[in-house]
Image (cartoon, rainbow, N blue to C red; front, side, top):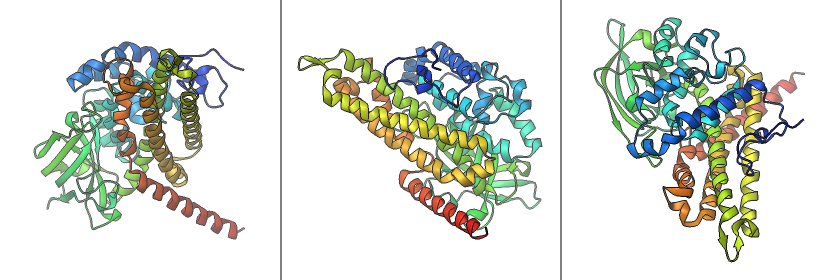
Length: 432
């Protein structure tokens, strides 16, 4: 049975279940979250995005507003929220027991739609999960009250100037002091999102020999010897992209995440949610762009016809719509599968698939951004007015293509993982 439509009625501007069509994935709590986030975003974010972009930063007070609304808890946790985190506040009053991967998807969809502030949380989204999944309870009890209350912030520091997708060959070192009480960290990290305002750096370091087995994860507090400087990027300054230098930074051994030598595995597990989260944002970015292009096509006249009356323009919209809805369906299928699997099985069975989903997200973004810009004409090149959101989306497309792994690397990963699963399946069948 269809329900009442929510949001825009322009084609492909909202997910199909927003339009009232039935879906097996979404319950009343998902609608409750959607309604809350739409209202909250339109009140606290949408009116200020242009001002923040011009200033090159989101005010620190905004982060506190997010904490008060309970947003930091699910942003840090992802699809599963520990029950004890309820004391920090849960967005829209949804309990940790109710929260699932589709709530996570709705949250990011609406944050992205509101605009301007999604980049404020990237550090928390990718920096907190290793702490949650692998750190000692003692370290968790110290750090989580600080970062979930908004008092302090965290980011993930893996990428290096000469080491992007090739994580196995990172060179930042962490050597134990003779008394065994501290690590001394030396090295550099680059393109670290949110690093400029972070207090903690969840850092992949080399504690052993070459290759993946020598990598560990270490939580490094901002302290003497740790320096940060901004890295200007194509999408703008709001993400606070950072170059981090570690020069004899002294870190207590208690800040080691899990055991030495597990850092590569911990990083790979973290990548799955990061890539899925990129797909969430890409979807809403595409929907924003096609919404604004449709509005323009319905009123703009050229050659004595409205643009939407031109077959070539309808052809563009049809091709964009089919790709956006296909990406939505694939994303929802992966979210559903992850809900049914443990983290370990999810990483094993869906790591390659999630990598390919992230690639597809970037490709759809590139197509939609370019087609919408062509429909808008000169307005699509303008940073103000009716084409502003499309111009911003077009400029930001590399933010969906490059982070989380480059296209070529992830396509190869997807094939290798598929072949690995095929061989495992053949081996299992041979034992029957």
